[in-house]
Length: 99
Image (cartoon, rainbow, N blue to C red; front, side):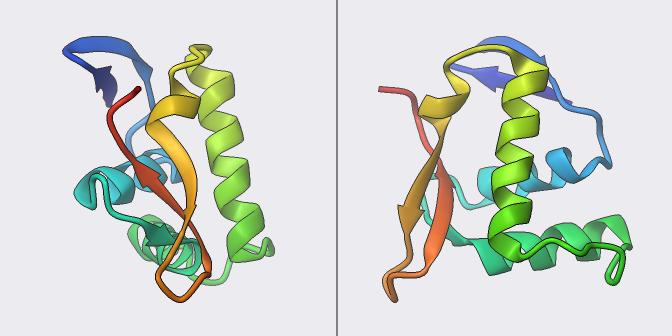
């Protein structure tokens, strides 16, 4: 699907790919932190690959963001998908408007 920022398509992420589900869960929780564990669980469930991943949740999430940056090749990715913390201080990502 197209990744649209401020009304402009900045690239495409293959639907049903892990990167797509990573982006989708962040979009569905726009401007809210989503823990690495929640992202990882969501992506595994949506892809139907509950037991196929050997990465930790954090490694998986970091890899997904890196893959998206490689695919999109636009520095705005770092402005819309940002590292943050949950209220319990666990690591998270959130999707937000670029600043």
